[in-house]
Length: 66
Image 1 (cartoon, rainbow, N blue to C red):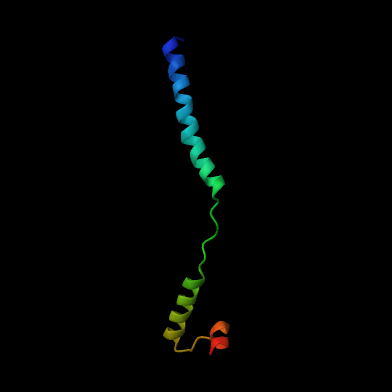
Image 2 (image 1 turned 180 degrees about the vertical axis):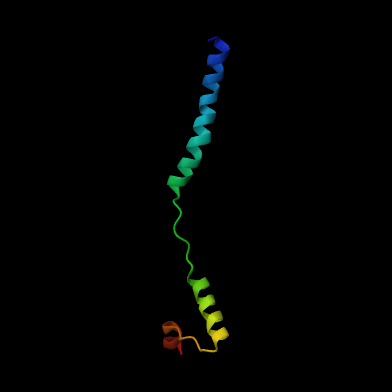
């Protein structure tokens, strides 16, 4: 192999390391946690309660405040 091929290989290595290593570092540096769906569940429970005509059970925190 000629010198140009070796230079191209050496110049490619930092780009490959950055292209592969940066996303891996970001993934391990800040792992995603599971999303919080409590507000969505409360909304859907309220919607289904209104649709069926039943009153939803009061939230314990709201009962204590009242």
